[in-house]
Amino acid sequence: MTPDQPSRPITKAVIPAAGLGTRFLPATKATPKEMLPVVDKPAIQYVVEESVRAGLDDLLIITGRNKAALEDHFDHHWELEQALEAKGDLHRLERVRESAVLKVHFVRQGQPKGLGHAVHVAKEHVGDNPFAVLLGDDLIDARDHLLEEMLRVREEKGGSVVALLEVPPESVHLYGCAAVDGRDGDVVRITGLVEKPDPSEAPSNLAVIGRYVLDPSVFEVLEHTPPGRGGEIQLTDALQTLASSSEPGGGVHGVVFRGRRYDTGDRLDYLKAVVRLGVDHAELGKDFGEWLDDFSGQRASGQR
Ligand code: G1P
Image (cartoon, rainbow, N blue to C red; front, side, top):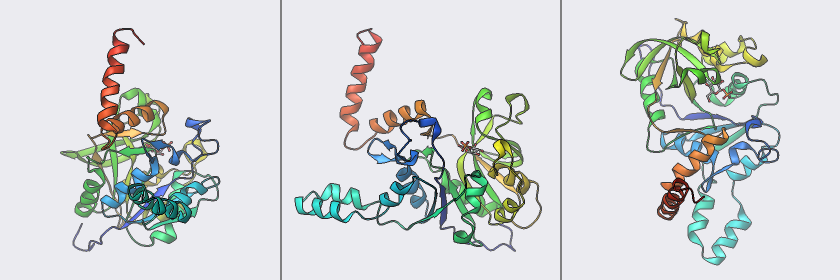
């Protein structure tokens, strides 16, 4: 931070969860994609826990139609809790309660006008504070500390910070893509951003993944950001404006992530996430790992 920008601790996180989940139909026809289980927790709970671990415990989830299950999940379920208590099943009781004791707020997006619009809906809750945005599809392994590193970079440089991942050039069209200079280890200065470019026009193979630490000046920029790719108001376009801004709060840096990330909105990556987190699971990991080795051996020898 520059001396005229006193640092304020960041406590707020916004989790956009209004999307339709079309990549996962028909599973997501009546169930929000954020509620799909990854081993034994819904995907969104991993994201909420990541946020809380990084010290961001004032959470706002942006929802829409058919997302009531999210509100139920982060609330108490008195009948269930009483039934578990009566049975003396304290382990399950604790697991049921752990998502209900968090400070989670909800607001509805109203109209599906894109990620930039969803983030703007958080303006009233966030106020004039820097805040994080965590996209529910991207699951970052709890052993990697991406968000903490991004908060550190915001503290040091000010402005906004995005998470970047090196992807194969043929996958760049699935992401926001960054033009960068001034590399310092895994921290880069962002000079431009383009949403889902054609690979032939992509400025790099650095893709924006679903973690952002944003300066509150993004709200005003979003108000003037016209619909972009897909006719939607794109967060990437607002960040492109901030990247070249010398106004207070301007400037965007990137943290190149080299850890474990699972895109649970993609069916193949979702299966990989379940297997990888299943193998590491405290209660199930040992048995599941042994079964998996067995299964792989049988497949390799053509028995399955
Ligand atoms: C969104 C963003 C995109 C980003 C991606 C990360 O796209 O618009 O810039 O790269 O998330 O997952 P979506 O995947 O929602 O289409």
